[in-house]
Length: 476
Image (cartoon, rainbow, N blue to C red; front, side, top):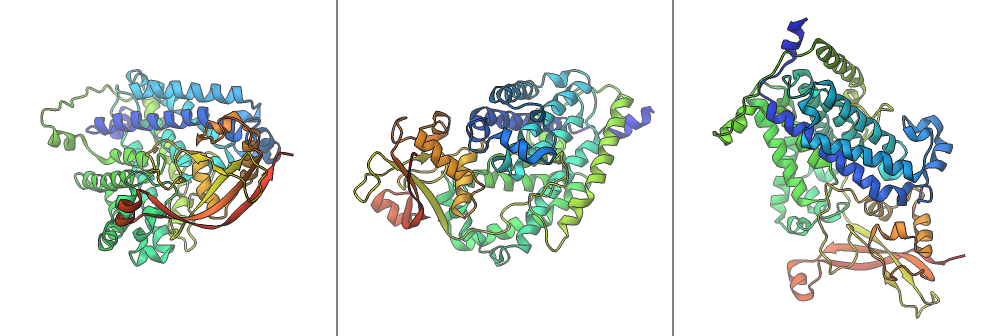
């Protein structure tokens, strides 16, 4: 059986393995820390969408989660801190210095812990990159330790994930909004994306012919380049470099949580060590591997067969006329359908939540609650938060598009109560912890200021009042 381990080993990908294992673990760390910070306020026992009530209603449909046994905010925080600790160890590379089963066990533990959180996270965890992180952790678990060569089948499985990510995103664009097909999508996207970053206005104001070139390059990168990930080297490596560059471009131009960060990390599965030698000739990459244990080789083969079995549905979805976007096909978030921005919002609306200490009448002085990431104050430049995920800010974007999910009315009630957990998720509480008498929600149309408007007014955003979303409401 020694031939099996030898056939699976892919020498020449040690740097890629280190990037994959430590990079994916770093994203898990961000996910767990996000849960510590945000989950109790949003989904805790007294949150906007309490988990105990969700589990009572959903039952087994919630999917695998340790919280089915019991949920409390204390247990949630303990789970998240345990996942954070294991993730830190993996980022430092400590489990990887042991036998292959040790990093495998570590990754499977954080995969299970984070899946328990995602499966009760409801709309606040209903993003494609949650499933992407779970699938990444499951696959990277089979990369082995420093004692053995990186398994070729595992690297190919990760490349298959990158292929589905990129090709799926490309196909959903071609089937979706006409603006992708006529190359005008980026006339709007940088301005209307869920959470612009500090550079988004710069990108939005670039000449429109350049925007068209950007879209054309995006189509080529997503619809053609991914096929070369499975080509012999150096073609696979060059394809990976192209994808990595485009992902860096997306990181620089927007706040998409860890979607782009994780995608570029996974793409290093196709970059061979020889590329790093070419860039840094003095770099020493000469790992010494022992024989691959038979049990580990068998596990890798079984994992590959399992992924191949689960891949049938996403493969059909890629070429289906009604392609699904960010859809899960199983309870374990493996081999899902990915894709983002099949349609482009052409006008930006923002919901501005305000409160007052007055009687709520015409002469009342209303003050706005400011969120950390989403646009609010027109004079404030948007910040960079990705790869951290501001869940409430993201859902405020969907709210402006007409999607509530049952959390917004509870949010207003929490603001009327001056709930400390919710207020900690905001950038500015205009009442410094005091309870307002009334709150309301108004809708504005936002657009980036032109260069001339910016010089004359100092404003990053120009806005126009659209209408009232929620009339003034008070505590009962």
